[in-house]
Image (cartoon, rainbow, N blue to C red; front, side):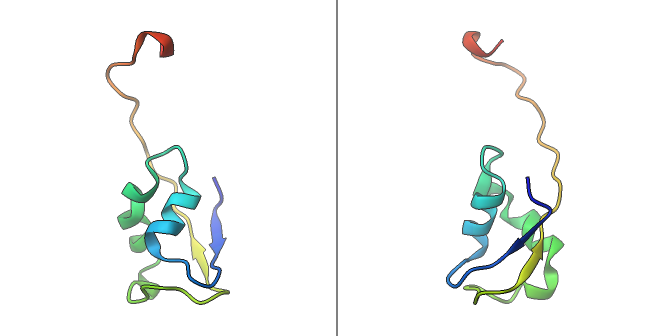
Length: 70
């Protein structure tokens, strides 16, 4: 998982979260991403060149797993 992300023209918070947290819930972690980059919270669609901090997030393991994942 990258520690920072440099925006490209047209990025938005959901898309950035999806790109940076693939396999970890992606866009469900948008709020953590915005909190870590509160300076840019008022931007909806990013221009190119903003460097955002990507916070580490704790994702608890599911309490039950399907048989093929045990």
